Every structure is written in C-alpha cells, then in structure tokens.
Amino acid sequence: MTKLKRATYSAAIKLETAQLVVDQGYTQEDAAKAMGVGKSTVSKWVTQLKQERNGQTPTASPMTPEQIEIRELKKQIQRIELEKDILKKATVNSIGQCNTL
Image 1 (cartoon, rainbow, N blue to C red):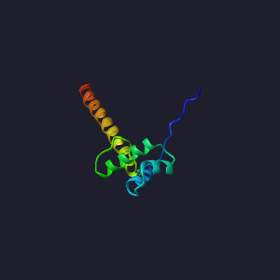
Image 2 (image 1 turned 90 degrees about the vertical axis):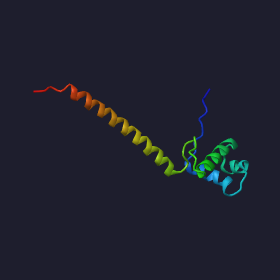
Image 3 (image 1 turned 90 degrees about the horizontal axis):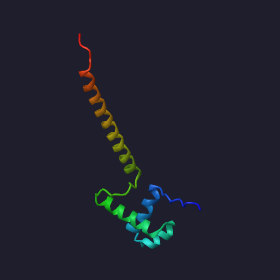
Image 4 (image 1 turned 135 degrees about the vertical axis):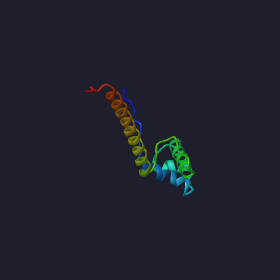
C-alpha cells in the first residue's frame, strides 16, 4: 500500500486562485474547479488573502515572494542573534578563566 503525497502549490497559484474569488467575483467552488484544487483549499487561501489585506498576520504560510523573503530574513535574524548571545556568554565565561600574570 503506497502513501498518497500531499499536493503542494506555489505562492503564485495560491495568490491567483484567491484573487479570483476576492477580486473577480468567482465563487470558491468555481475558482477551485478552474484551478484544479479543492474547495476547502481555496477557502483557506481566500481567508489568508483577506487577512493579509486587512493588515493581520495570517497563521498560514506567506503567499507572495516578498512575504516569503521577509519570513526567511526574520528566521536568519533570530539565528544570528542566538549565535551572538552564545558567543557573548562564552566570552564572559572565558574571561574569568584567563591566566593572569
């Protein structure tokens, strides 16, 4: 018995599909058929797009390339700050262990 793979969609497809509903007046069902995705999937994408346009941070992953880049940069900043804190603590600890003349 093989395990089914979950479909993944690009940010462009998600955005285009959600815009069909929000901007062009398609029903979620019609947009789902036109784009070949499930109706519940379209519903999630529409909700996410509406939240983003209202200035809310959606719980789902970002849709636009800019939002993806911002998310990645924030992760990088967190990692660098953590590394900095570790190095700072290591420096403080090693100063106390230095040999004095």
